Length: 426
Figure 1: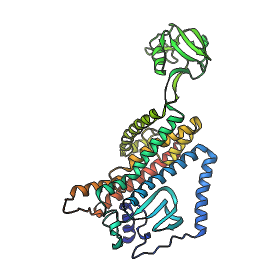
Figure 2: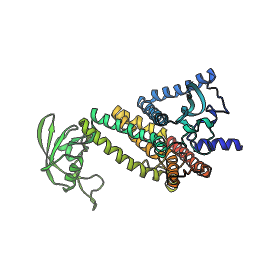
Figure 3: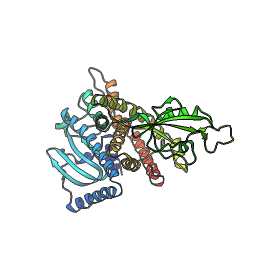
Figure 4: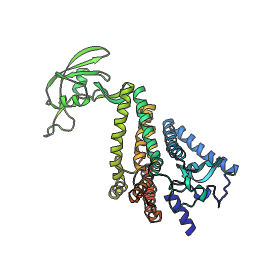
């Protein structure tokens, strides 16, 4: 039991991976995996992806996008570690039992059974990680503070790069979702409404409402609310390039007749948002703004989701709040599939960009086993060090906290999965 705990502890605080699988003076691993294991495991994963695609191709597109994002996260760690002289011994997609494995040079690459993440194993992540004395100069712990900080934050930085590329790419090709500058009638008029009586049709562009120029749906709502039931108004619409002036007598909003809340009712919904084409330079600027605003929202979201009171409220509520409830990749995929049906590839890529920002922010929480926890340790060691003495933290003291964090994550995962199944998003 103690050896099992030691192994789990080392994986939690050591950045993932199996420390006993790396070549060393004490271990000579065999990277081969039985062919039957590889065929069955890969076949199950392929069947799962095929099932997702058969239900909704956009769900499959979104999931593949997530897998690529996770892969690029680890590429960030892998490339920066090797460029800064650290020794990398493993690069795996997934966790759990190995399905595929091969060795190239000193690195073991492969695929594991549970596609819920990935890891890169760098030797000597802390004082508990035993390494061959000959490799000590290539350990993570032996490198300078700037190099360690670069390597450990490279994964989250990669998520930022992914988000910037996705945002800017969509904006420059398909446009950015925002105000179009015109108000379009989004639906057929409500039966018996003033709009129906005046002859308004779905697809008409509303130019003005009783003299008030309309550029946004908020303009339209405000113009109607400024009137009273029974008022007669003139509405100018553009119908397929033809300008029409229509006269309507406003009715009372349904359900408010003979009440103090009675207000004017026109009878159609005006919509003024869509994808608006922007130039390449503006796309880059908008992408930076949206990454920053999404990051701020992600920070707030992390603290909301981690709030035990919020978790309890959502689990006991008949209808969980979609804005504050915990969720998993299942819920995100549900949303991705629905957005794909409505908006196609551009909507899926925008959602994927936002998810990358959230993952990047979440991963930088200053707690082990997150990358942010390793960064916090590096910063603490730097603060405690002097010109003549380099301080190294005793990671054993942080192992219980890392274990508690993992327990909390498991609880959130179970709660999120329960809500995603019982109350699907989308």
